[in-house]
Image 1 (cartoon, protein in one colour):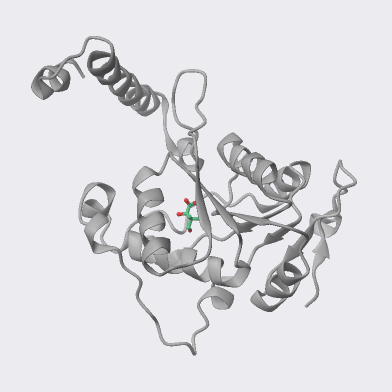
Image 2 (cartoon, helix red, strand yellow):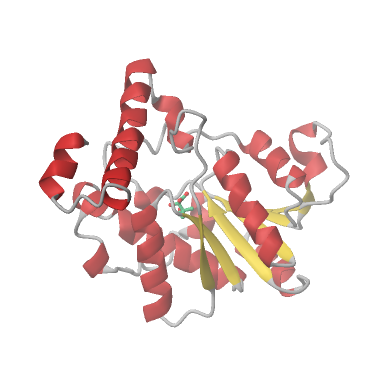
Length: 245
Ligand code: PAF
């Protein structure tokens, strides 16, 4: 299959004239990557794009000559009973946003393409950074993240790959994997983009009802409170900080 231009998707004409390519196979993505101009930045995503992703693309454009985006809801990073089947999938709108952000190409593979049934599974693990925090309550999650990110970095061999600080543990795990496996890609951390009330932008925010959303903002406020106490009030007692939070 050859690359398609964005204006073909869904038969709906896109607003810009930017000619973005869309690939669904590893082979096409590799071929176009090899023809790419200058430094390449990859923005790995699971789609349902928002301002936070646009910031990753913007940083990619600032630091590189060519930006590629991957959109793939990676099944190996979802545990049993998690939201794999319900994860928001908004491909057509995502492609519009990528095109408006002047992305050169989008890779949207199928599950079979990324995990061919005839290939024997390999495991990638950063155990020292994954037994705690999110890793503790989502066993296997970071193995799935590492595995798919390693595949994407091998397919695109980008000079830069953009990761949000919002998923801070993921960022640190990916940085550790890249360092230990001596991959030639620089992982670029990009600051979190927040809603006006402080909530970090996330594709999963759409799951929140009003009370849950208020709680989520409370978390941000508590963290800001802790930061103020430590940085401005020079508080050194962790229990005092915890109580205030
Ligand atoms: O942060 C995400 O959206 C995903 O974990 C990633 C890095 C695209 C891997 O599937």
